[in-house]
Length: 112
Length: 112
Image (cartoon, rainbow over all chains, first blue to last red; front, side):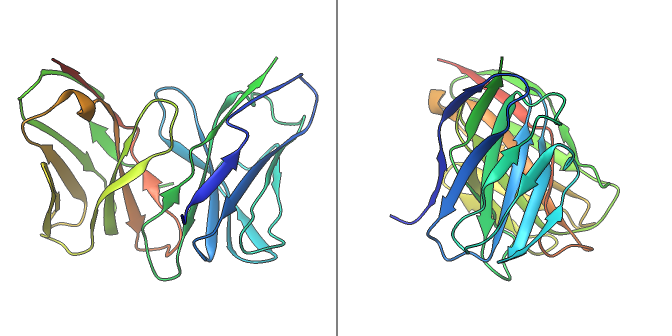
């Protein structure tokens, strides 16, 4: 089945450690996105990538890094510089020319 | 950045009742999207609207793209318990082909 997968579903890390969240899509979509969701908040854009080997900062990029070496994959690294990393992280993708973003199931990161 | 005002923040209704929620903005949008998110899951696209004045249905759901292009509403008729969740509106601004702006969501609770 075509879709977006995120792994793992739940992730626990100690404060000060970097952690990488996986996002893979087999929809042949060109653009991919990372969002952060906190309780009672809307989705806030962290980074997005329109093509391979290119990405742009979103509204809250500080403390995060990404790479886009393959069309199918857009991993997000939450670095120790992120002051409050505990949140629900959502990956999305979109085909060229469309506005309809499709989301993965999310990863809940808890930093202890 | 651009913001969407989504209301109400939460609704408590009885099974069988109709529900209405809306999003407004001070800016014009090209596209309006409505998503539903179940707890701990990623948002799922319900309806996409592309033209001012457009009225689109998906089962018991009906959404409209406002004439001014600055608002949209979503109606759910004859609510059932599985309608419970958070409903998000999202708009694609004129200035961006790849980014969406999200509302903060409406939490819907349906009492059986």
